[in-house]
Length: 327
Image (cartoon, rainbow, N blue to C red; front, side, top):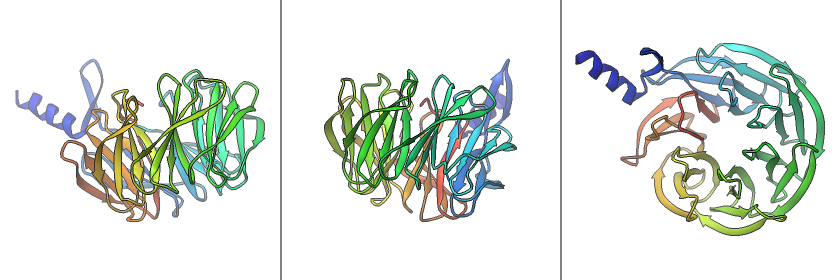
């Protein structure tokens, strides 16, 4: 009974995770990308300390866990490289060069396409993926400053926000042709799609809202702006299939949105300019990079309080871990 109690307690704290056949292993690390130091902090979720730092290329901005969960990819925008890291061991697997200005990145769910947004250079790049190598197929010119990407569940369409021209663009993946573009509110950043592919949510960093688009027809329709807080920026699914978190970087808060009713149903105060987020496997904790405070902040969604902060590097941005809530 004592052993069982210890295991149960460790699981609740994120300290152990099951591999199968009753075998338990150490918790997978949490990765925090430090944009202004060209490295990634590796956090032990048991001791809540930084165990090491992984050097990357120049000015990394976003992390991405591949759909098969075999690699975390760091996009090094000024380094024109991708750093592949093992999400279990935090060991560098390889570096891929000649990827021009990879600011944001996505794999299609079927893992046939890898797509990057060149934030400085105003284009989106489409790469074929054969399971090991990337081959550039087409570079698509866009509007000013492509920011974040979202790919639908069928791997047919990629959506991208245009940060400085206030637009949302949809591109057909098979042909790499722009399907449509539409105006948004001020300075659109992150973008997230509903599970049925009928709604797209856009964080308006230059405003205080999340704009919702109906994309089920031939042309997109803006149907609502959900007021969340100043600097609405990045999204992460709550894990229950219905709710979505958005970080409000200027308001120092995180809002919880009901994707069916388009209403804010909860809010959590978070200091230091909350940016990218990750959600624990049980859905209770939000791990968020406090961009201006050089901290990884952990928020308990039950108590609505910050329960700990871990010092990291300068301008922490992306946050990912293998032990996450469903996307």
